[in-house]
Image (cartoon, rainbow, N blue to C red):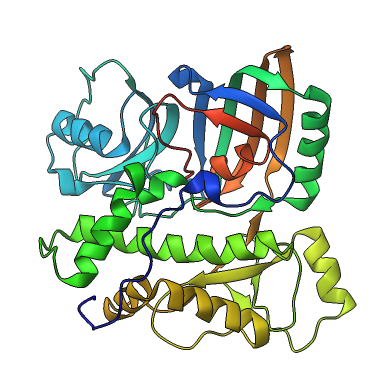
Length: 361
C-alpha cells in the first residue's frame, strides 16, 4: 500500500528492451559507445545570448564527465558556489558532449583555467539571465555503431522511413536508473518508506514514475499500431511544443497536418486533474493508471498536474553513412526532452557494455 492507501500495483519487471518497436525486429546487431567519441551530442539553443548581463555563459566540450560533475568543477574554477552554476539539460558521461553552462558572476569575469582533461571552454559570452532546465531547441547527435551484423540495405531503407514516419517517443532507459532503481525508490517514497526529503532525488523519482506510465501507454499504442495515428478521443499536441488541443472531429486538414509532422497524438504525463482524452483513448490511459495505481496516486499526491507528451518524434536531418561493412555512422537532430535511443532501438539491437544513456536533455 502507498501513503494514500492505494495498492502499489504489479512489480515493475519490464525494461526498455521489452517495450514494443514500431517495426519488425531490429535489422542489425551492433556495439554502441565503444568509446566516448562514438556518441557525440551538441546542444542547439533557441536564441543567442545577449552579450551583456550578470551571467557568464560558457559553451563547454566535455568527455567522460556527467553534467553535474562538470558543474562542480566549473564552480570551483570560477570561485562561486555550486548553486550559482546552471545548465539546460543533463548529458551522459560516456560521451563527448557540447553544452552550455551559466555562472552567476555579476561585475566580474574570472579566469577559468586549470580545467581537468576532458573539459574545455569553447566560447564565453554574457547574458541577462541564467540557463534553466529545458531551455533548449534540441540536440544534434553523431553516433557510430560498430561491429554491425545484419541487413545493411534494409537498415538504410528503414532510416528513410523514419525520416517521414518518426519513431515512438519513449523515455530512455536511463530515466529509470540502473535495473529500474529509480522506480523502486519512487515506490518507497510513495509508500512512506523513504522519507529522506532530498528535493533533487525526489524530482528524479517523480520523473521516473511519470515516465513509466507514459511509456506503458505508448507501448500499448505501438502494439496496436495506433501510436502515429489519430483516433477519436485523442488529444493532439503541436510539434516541438507543450500546447495541445482536443479535435472536435477528425478531418482532412488534421490528417494532412499529422502526415506533415505538424501535430502528433499525445500520451499522459500523469498528475492531478481530469484526462482531456475521450472514449477508448481515455479508457486505455485510465486502465494503465489503474494497473500502476501506486505510481498514479503518488504523483497526484505529490501535486503534479496532468500534462501531455507527443507519442512520436520525427528525427530531423537524419544522415547515415556506412564506413565499412561493420561500421555505421548516424547523424540526426531531436527536440529537447527526447532520446536518441528511441531512434537507435528502431534500427539496431545494440549492446552498450554497461554504459547507460542516450538522453537529449
